[in-house]
Image (cartoon, rainbow, N blue to C red):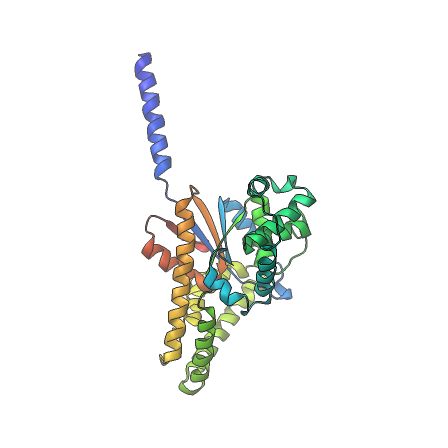
Length: 315
């Protein structure tokens, strides 16, 4: 009798373990508004509560991959003054900084609340040396605001959502952005807009933007801008505008712009999926500009069927 009980127990444990192993890795995508106006400065507060409740094991941010030389080749003189400054700092520190892998590995695994001021400074320099912009920004945020993060709204996704969540969960962040063809995308965008003034596309786009703005007013006042932004209808509109699917005529420039937009989303999805699949993390959260959400969802579902992809409002 004892033997049968033991065997049954072992069988139950085996079934439980097998079930746990089969649990799919999931990716929850949250569409952000980047910087919000002062009048709705607390818009990220409900999104932060939601993200904490989700309880992620990994956080992915819209920041270039450290080893993505093509993106950095553009960004070192590109659209972002912040990225320009970071690249110059990284390029300089790689020539002078005495990087110690053992020390870095030890400190990067340490709880944030236990890091000393000098250890924080070392990590900041180490992440600059490694050209890891996401974690450089995170540790700089820790140095500035402390373990609980900014008390007053910063009005930006990093300060009010992403880095607060990372500190709360004691997690590093994973970079996943790709800006290899961002210059070409913006060149095509400008040409498409010029052409749109002649063929009626701009009028269509302007009308869509007006409706989107009007629809967001009440949710914004009620501190539900994040929830409104992550409605599938809102996400579809943002995707439509960014991919030039609203145009009345597919000119060469508009087609090129759509091509570069879709290719960027495809590479970003690959960056996310490759890192998720290489990890043993089940609950992964992606913070990304809301215009990218639909494109990422499409690419992830089409090319990585073993990953469970969920949008914020559909969780």
